Length: 422
Figure (cartoon, rainbow, N blue to C red):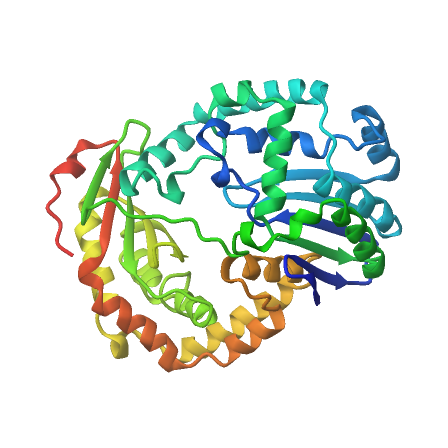
């Protein structure tokens, strides 16, 4: 994979491969809905619906006909932090999709007819999604766990009333914000890649917007939206849409950074994933849980463990978690340590066979850590992970167990009477 940085705010990730398929993606690093003003809530989502719908010279139907005729697929997406445009095609159409996507990303043409049509679709989507029981339960629970202004409580869907008032002028202002606040990440993977042509087209469009490279207005490429826990140690959430059994979330303080990313993946496998100590004990040996999921949250610097179980087993489960993270020498498995390193490496190698896997990995590293680390560099770090690194993570978790937070969600009000110790 090649990494080029033709300007301080443009990052090109290229993975030429012997493939008939070609993929192209352009990302605004700070183009997501998190950056909307209160009056614009949800308008970035609507902008995404419209931005890849036409060009200056092709209206909606003409562009649609071109896509069908040439087997080109154009799309866009919005998240809380990023917005992106994507294109896939036959490798011989590199210049066609490059021309289309660069124009859409840097000089989009907005159309009132398209705006009106997509506005109705987005309004229905907001209504339908907000009526989804799983969606409602997720955000109601999240609002109980995190402070109101936290990233975890942010909904990209936005506000129906604000979306209904969206104008073309709003689109122009929001698009200006996308460009002025963002780095551009351009990812290419597959056959037919012409980097010189890409950079030439890119520069022509950027010359028309000389203020885009203004240093003072740019967010860091790895912008990190804040999240903060509410003040609790144990939080029972009784909700009509929850299951009658219990969903437990345990948050343990854990150091999470670029340097220990590989070690954390090995740690996760050793203790939390299928074949790991906690998983084997809680599910296979004791039969206390239906399933276990784990994640590392860079924003809160916590290891999150999610478990599904019967209410009467909650205390026993917390006792087992405390035991697993209470004695490293007792719970560390040296043979598994080497086995999991090799297993993870094989999974990485297999993943690299997928078109776009290498560029997606480096893209995620740029957005999370601000570093263009490659799969190869990460693999080296993985293989050099030591037992001492695993023990350091383990000891930090063990020494900070008194600061853990436990959330229990159920429709059974009996969880409010639990007197847990952990």
